[in-house]
Image 1 (tube, rainbow, N blue to C red):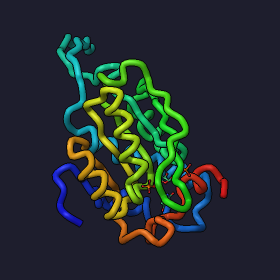
Image 2: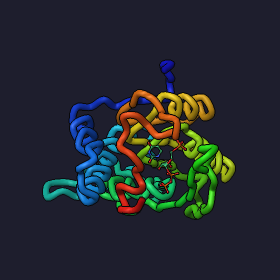
Image 3: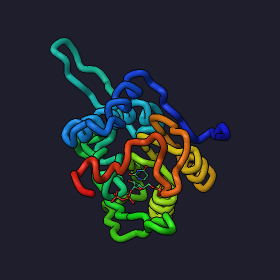
Length: 213
Ligand code: PRP
Ligand code: URA
């Protein structure tokens, strides 16, 4: 895969450790959900290292009053791509409990692998917020590209995308279609199979999170 300026691949040992458990077909639904949340929290820490809207506040310690910096309330929106993106929301909410959540519902057509949008509800004032679009799987990149285009059509200018596992094809597609969007991927897998599933991957993330088939 090309070296894209707007792509960060984590390759962090703590995240690699958790992803190894996540991939295992024997990992229970409960543990799978917990791991998705934990990995998301670790990713968010890095994803929000720069460019987060903050403001100055005065804080009175037991000894004196000092000026401090806090993240602006209501500055961040989480946009999970349904369904599997829902599994990442709590991982960000533990850091920013007041973040509003917008939902974009998409499923992949099983024959064409093209995303079909079936739902979209976004928080008021979304165009002013830092939008974190989340989906554990970035396979062909179709769902992520469409979700990001949907946000841009609503006037959003500050968009970041986080996926736990990416395929080279999908990462390239999003990076090239949306060069202004920073893309964070925990690990880059080898390839897609003939059904556009990621190899080695972890299977169907939505099914493993929610216990469906
Ligand atoms: C999965 C996954 C992504 C999409 C990735 O969702 O959660 O949204 O596929 O594939 P792409 O990069 O090729 O678009 P799916 O369509 O299976 O729906 P689900 O989350 O409801 O299971
Ligand atoms: N969606 C998934 O859940 N898994 C894949 O490997 C590809 C798309």
